[in-house]
Image (cartoon, rainbow, N blue to C red; front, side, top):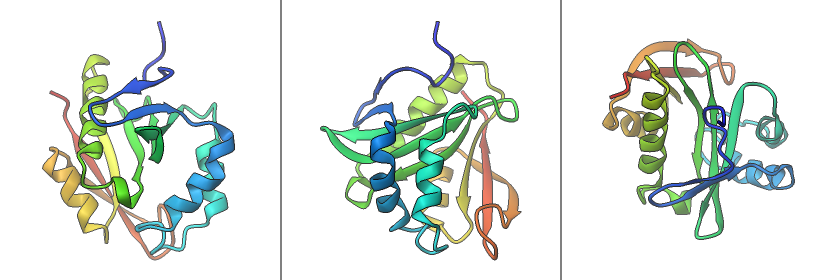
Length: 164
């Protein structure tokens, strides 16, 4: 039996999640930090690349693929406060608003439910109204404001959902 969130690949409705290979992390990091919220906070690409490359820290990291193209990245930390934490959901602009994020959240919730998780968690920058609306449409509710978590002078909003 594999551990939670550690499958070699996951086929979703609109995308495929595959484990992140170290050789693509630098380029993917450059693309991620070029878009909000990371661009707003001037988040360094080398720090994002180190995060994407890291392993053995209790997180599962995936490349999001759409028809063979690099579409973004996902990182899930489990266990975390009695459930999984979706610590990164980054879809490149051309792959946004296509239902891919929704299919990732559906899979995340399904996995959490199968684990018997009491909570599902996500986080979004307080200024990122689009992300906050997205998560709230999918049943996540704000539970805490975390100042300075990602960058000084910015707040992150922790959101929680009870699995079905």
